[in-house]
Image (cartoon, rainbow, N blue to C red):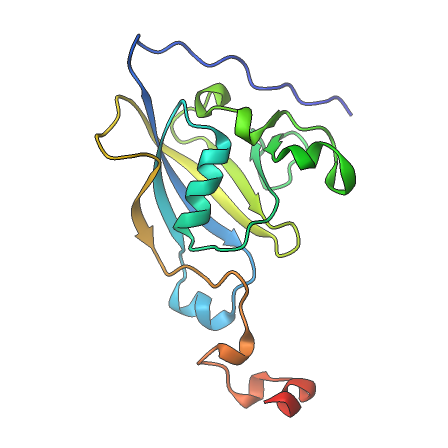
Length: 190
């Protein structure tokens, strides 16, 4: 299988101008209970980030926007049609390039890959996979790309839809869980 091509150099923007990306980050898979999904059918965050920020900066923004507290490995998948698409370019932690988590080579290290280097266009979609055991998958859509930057510090969350799911859901703490939902082993613990 041929190795995917790495991102091309960043496009040239007007001298002294900054590129502002507005990204809609939607949770599409992960460890959520049915009652959480019933109450929060859509969970998304809209994040603004500059073109000179890195994918690691975007990871940090998503991590905070979804109220996570325990770091795990992650990767961004750019250019694929769906999550885990073999044709996608993968960007992640340097640990993904070697050791037990290595797969097909990374196109780039997240901490060294700037947003502008991805050559994104409005309406483009890419994916963010967090915690390879619990498999939190996010769909990121480029809502807009503008020249200039707001005065507020970036990256920043500008919109929240739905509650943040607990990073580690515990069925015993789920208020909507009744005894019919527990298996025999869980009933003896309750």
